[in-house]
Length: 159
Image (cartoon, rainbow, N blue to C red; front, side, top):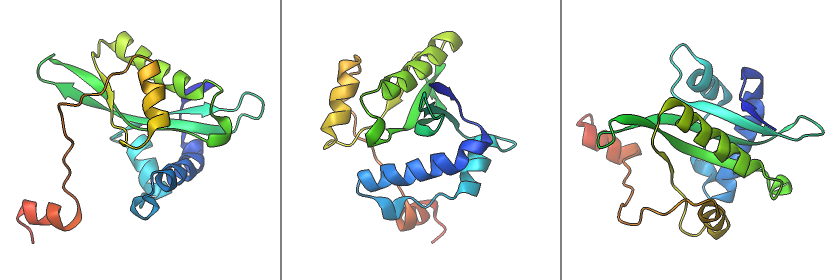
C-alpha cells in the first residue's frame, strides 16, 4: 500500500500535485514540471523525498507524501517537514492517508527525528479533522510567512 517513490512514479505524482493544487484553489501556482520533480527527488543531490500510496488491486498510485528534513535548534536534531499529503478523493477513507503519515512517523522514530510537521489551510476542515483524530495539534502561536516572486527579488537586493 505504501512505498518509497521511484522515478517511474513521477508522472503520477505530478498529476496528483496538480489535483491537490486545484483542490486548494491555486492551480495557477503549481508550476513544477516532471523534470523538476525528478531532479528534486532523484537527482544527484535530492532536496526532497516521496512516498506513494498504491491501490491494492491495481497498483496504481492514488496518493503521495513529499517531505524533506528540517532541523530544530531547540531539540538539536532533524525532523520531517511534510510538504504535501494527498490522496485522490475516490480513494479516501481507505486508510491511505493514515498509512502515509504512519510511514513518515516511523522514519522519524527509527532515525531519532523528534518532529513531524506540516501546514494545512485553515478552511480545509476535513484535513484538520483527520490530523487531529491522529493526535496532531495545531501550532496556533506561529504564523507562516512567505516571500515569493517580486517580494523575494526585492528582499534579495537584486531588483
